[in-house]
Amino acid sequence: MTMTTIDPSVQAELSRLRDSIDNIDAAVVHMLAERFKCTQQVGHLKAEHKLPPADPSREAEQIARLRRLAENAKLDPAFAEKLLNFIIAEVIRHHETIAKSA
Image (cartoon, rainbow, N blue to C red; front, side, top):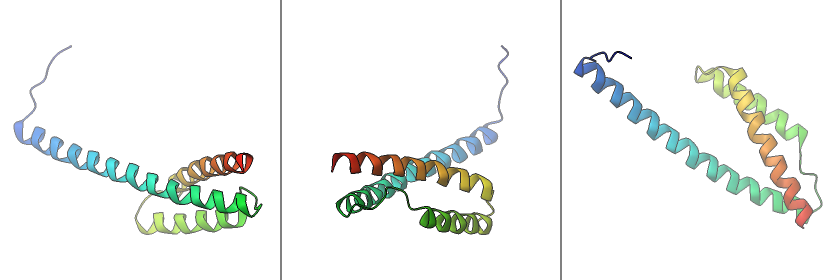
């Protein structure tokens, strides 16, 4: 493997951008943690009142809303929908677990 010398100004810019990415990743993780704290509370409320773990109409509204937000933010709406579907599946799994233990 050959080692190439990177211009110091390029290395500095690369480091700056990577630091920003690391900060954003940390914020995303913390935001997801807060989101899941709220959805856990929803799961307990649903279990107490014998409501189903999934709410397809709410999920459809959220997907449409997130797609609009993504478009406005110049983010691929299909990617945003895939991400939300992944999160929703995890939330439903949590709600099912909560319901079984109630």
